[in-house]
Amino acid sequence: MYHKAKRGHERGVAEQSKTQPKAFWKFVKTKLKTKSGIAPLLSDPGDPRAICHDDKAEILQKQFVSVFTREPIGPTPLLSVRVHNCMAEPYISRSRLLKKLASVNISKSCGPDEIHPRIIKELSNQFAEPITILYRKSIELGELPTDWTEVLVALIYKKGSKKLASNYRPISLTSVLCMILESIICESIIKHLSDNNAPSQKQIWFCAWSLYCASAAALPHSLL
Image (cartoon, rainbow, N blue to C red; front, side, top):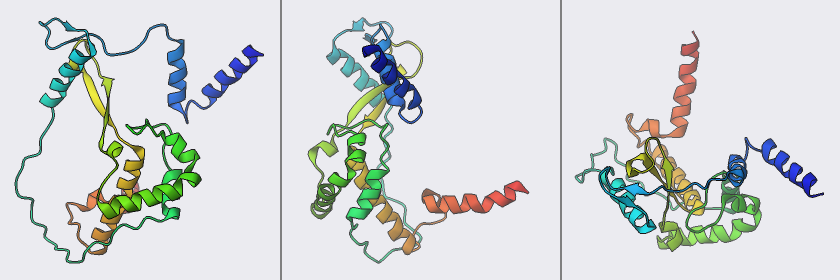
């Protein structure tokens, strides 16, 4: 009975490996004898290794700060087209939010709030009403929940020696609920700019719809 259930589980993981790759790799990791993690790091090739987690965190922090690009502080460029109409406050309806929740990618990782995308998608009907209230209140007050302002930093090994901090790349994991709210606000901003013909020719490529139209228009010429 046990072996039959085990084979069924393994078959299910294999069949869903394309749609749920994280479940597949999680299963693979359980079969490995070695455990992955951050190897003892060197602040530079001549220094002794950092063994404890605090030392590793300090070395990685220094590395990431050293390669961080800061945007120059100065006056912003003047826009050729001025928009005098005030942007309306983004309206969040239950039906609009349901579409957002249903399109959540369940293979993504959760943020500091530890709310996994799969839970959000599977329970979208139950979550829609309270999340709608939360989003509206957040926009009204101009504030975000504390967990939404925090970030989990995951490390991705690139190549080369695992003892050097420069061979790791940081990835920021933020709240999925916060990213959904960001997408709604972003759509409202783009719509406001488009309705007022605000984007210049240099900015228009940032609009997904304009990029689609331009690609569609260029397609027949590329086929000739």
